[in-house]
Length: 531
Image 1 (cartoon, rainbow, N blue to C red):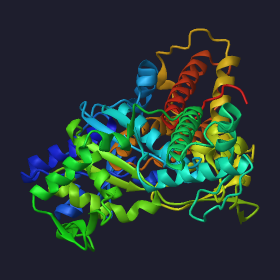
Image 2: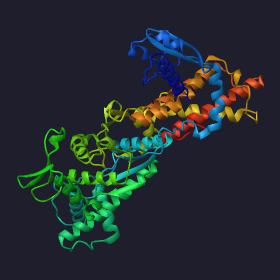
Image 3: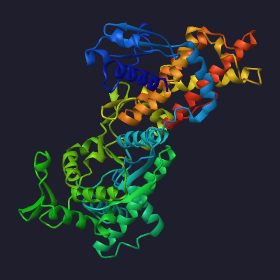
Image 4: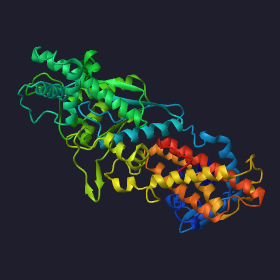
């Protein structure tokens, strides 16, 4: 990778000149006059940038310039020309990296409570975790995708009571619907499905037994619905971890015992508390309530101790915005048990669906929110994925439904996919059967070289995202690559009377197809050959 090669050249020069070991950061300038890569390392070291520039010699560089203290590097056209052949040789492996060194990463994401349909926020988290896992794998990590099934506790009890009320109501009994119940039409659907299959066979059972049966049936239906939808939108998991198992195997009790043994718990007001303030939290947190019920924190701690036992080098939790308050308390436990350096919690922000300039708030089936299934029905999987990926997960997003439905260059998904379809069309029209060219040195036009420069950024994007988790860099890169290709297509006639030049340009087109397909595959977005 050219970026690493330039970094090594700079580090070697500095070590020879000043006997110093330094970390070098390279940026890609937005203007071509500042080269392909630039660094401010001389200013950071308070050294003469020209002295460093003059000491660097390499065949891969056309020239090195110093401007305003920055050292700017211009990659040679000979190097760029050779990269086309390299991309064609590597094919789908282009962009693969070994920086992960086979380390194990656990990515737990989406993990919606099985008490309602998946909504827009869940979709955003699901796509984020899925794509980040794809990137980790391409960067050389061994990634486990995990879904934590919250199937224990008060919210699950409420699900059972909510279904029970609608079950009795549908069978002609007069019931009182508590405002604490889940109120969406999906609860009526679950009750109706149970009646359709089993009739009124549970109606005369003791209430506790009936509610338990209906709860389990509701849980099964909600979880299966989530699994089916996630599979439909291309999100897969390696592990579905049940919260209930933590209690059945005594892991929650064991985790609390370990905290007590370490001296970080105390009793007050008949409850058991975790002294999280000792680790920077704003107040201590309850582990066991006065009524003897454990809190979510207790099972969260046990769950992460279990993850640690599976020997991951890094654990990434993708949580919804409503869970931000839990970060400090879980990190307190991580510090107690010594896995705080291995745990990264990322909070996804809220999503608003906007149509005709107005927020779409209501959903008949969801009750108070728009479901992911409804969105997919409106715009399709490709558009939903691409739009959600375009913004950093930690920023709010307005999902523009009008733009999402647009079938023109205004729609970024259409714009990128059209570039891929155009590439396929060019290759189909070519009458040259053997595209292999040994005259890639004919690629000298500014737009040809500019396209190669954009292509070789892809491995850098993969490594950068594997380090900073900023997956919005992928759709941004895809759009930039599409723009650069369209410019090349406008400036350079691909198929002409000059057979050698045609073959060389077709190689460049094929290389672009390879890279664009690779980035779309990482995002889980389709690459249509015709549009």
